[in-house]
Image (cartoon, rainbow, N blue to C red):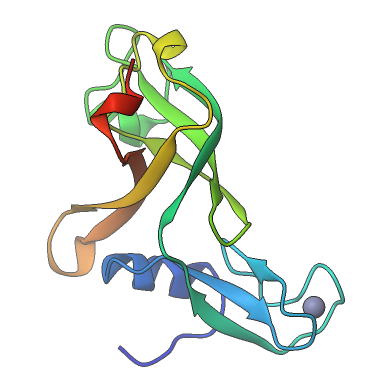
Length: 144
Ligand SMILES: [Zn+2]
């Protein structure tokens, strides 16, 4: 893949290659995930792609019973909810993503502060192929 311009399209293209990418400001070195084409700290426009390790800490969580149509089509509903959370990446940025490998019916059982790692869920084939960024607990011991 040729390096795409910094933005949502490039972010998703890299997810397809199982790479979680952010953008780093060439002036002040702050990193943004998802990537920003303009630095929110110093407004510099020269940014470069930076690969994240894909590990972090779960800092907030919600269980969703009534999701968007795409999630309903996957079978999620009031009886089968799913979790979305905020993950603070080891590099410092926070990102919102689906949390897998947890009991969404019992969100109180999911501890804030869990160590999580990125899981790339691929769907479809060819041009219809999409990749969803999710995170799962690193250790089964983290699931109480
Ligand atoms: Zn900057």
